[in-house]
Length: 222
Image 1 (cartoon, one colour):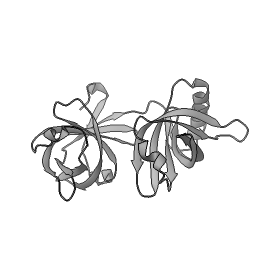
Image 2 (image 1 turned 180 degrees about the vertical axis):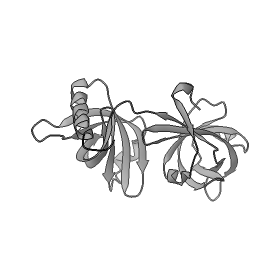
Image 3 (image 1 turned 90 degrees about the horizontal axis):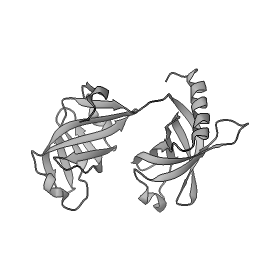
Image 4 (image 1 turned 90 degrees about the vertical axis):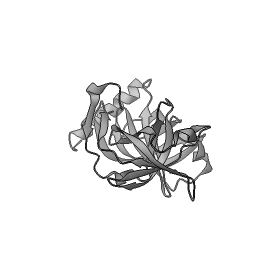
């Protein structure tokens, strides 16, 4: 799955039902493109069901028996496995069935401390401001949640989108404002959840975040 095997660990897949509703990336055969779609079902030990990605000519790769690589992000890890297409159906929904993996390879993305927090914050997207909360914070990024987010402005928000986040870590100092890139997005009926990566060209502000994380980590298990 990964090019640098020194950074890869292999583990048993366990029950992947937790992936239902999560966004996955898929590579088909020798196609170097990465396609994003959502997991729609899991039968532990049997198969995994996804939406079919939408792209011109991609249906040629949906033939049963073709190879694929599925990746997802979980707890700061890039996880992935090689698999084989079992079945492709178009009715009543366009779905792909993949073989359940024997093992999963993981790569740790986290190079800095990360703490669980509950901080109010806002994001600026399409020139408007939206309230939400930060649940996970490190010097490199955070996990941000919006409640009751159904707004047409978010139709175009996806992995790679750029926005601005603002939150406070001290009543005595100016709030934190950082440019971010969306690296993970989950949209469901009530919540919009995003993994955000802070742009590196804001070192002074990022250092404030890092100092806060170091301080909080003394009291929390990380």
